[in-house]
View (cartoon, rainbow, N blue to C red):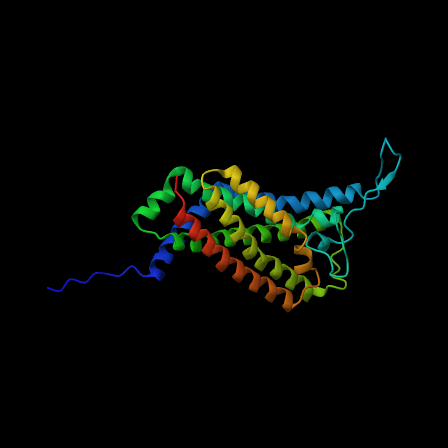
Length: 265
């Protein structure tokens, strides 16, 4: 009688890891809380800023008057034109780009929970390789980040309608807005590996993972409007795809090395 041993190939290991991680992700209350926050955030932002539009505030020390300017168009909650510079204004800060920081919360908590519960140590001991773990977490957290961005986009449509803001596409056009959204979705693949690297560095120390992720995220924050303007084209999408692939492979290798060289507790 011939005995055959089934080889545990990379594809089978990764498929098993993805199945487990996706199940854990979609049974985790945190994901639905964050998606709900992303859905409600643009509604509150657009409605409140519209109510405050034109209001005048006076600095009691200098007497300088400041006029509050709200959003002129619903699509400004998604991005600004490449010819415009929103800078540190309300429009430049209170938009979908904030979600790249919120994605750090999802990634860091999701990974820290593995190390706090002892799941990661048991996983690496029994069946999984550290490289499989990094790849699976990158894919799953990217999917979660995409859901958050799509929820914000849906909330923007609802908030714009409630606030009575125009949906005129203007110079961006429908194609530009679609490409802008695709660019932002692909750009999540740049930020997720950064947050994952800090998560495996911090492991169960969630505060360290979050602080490191936020600090690096702030360095890249001002680049987001330049890479994903409202009038984006296929070139912007391709740049974000290329950047996501580069960061995923490069930082994924670094994360794998960190897991191999450091203690899992």
